Image 1 (cartoon, helix red, strand yellow):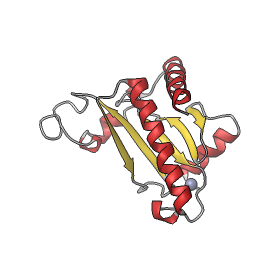
Image 2 (image 1 turned 90 degrees about the vertical axis):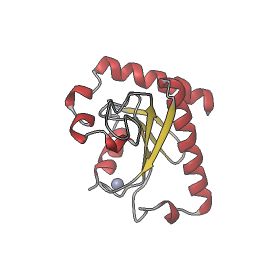
Image 3 (image 1 turned 90 degrees about the horizontal axis):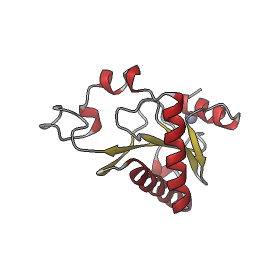
Length: 154
Ligand SMILES: [Zn+2]
């Protein structure tokens, strides 16, 4: 079983505290770790044999991409991004899912090219440190803020 399928099953049971909203092609969830404040994921609804964007038929692919872009805009508006970063990797679990990172100046400290560069130039142990997990109250506020912005765009 893949971790993302697990999380989706939790959403369906009403037991996923990170869940924000269901769209046509996927689920919007707040990331477990929040070093990059507002980090959000958009999980494609089904797994099956779909592990690449090009496995989707054209209409589904266009809808998935459009919805991802809407989620990114809502994240940007909700959390004050200077720039959004988009990642579709699938090297942990091949289940299609977008990582959406709101970026601001200084968020990778001195790492990378004098503090500039992709999120993965920031050390993994700092990015996934338990200190970066939102409290229940913070998570609730973040979900509400993102939901308001999503609903404005949908
Ligand atoms: Zn899966």
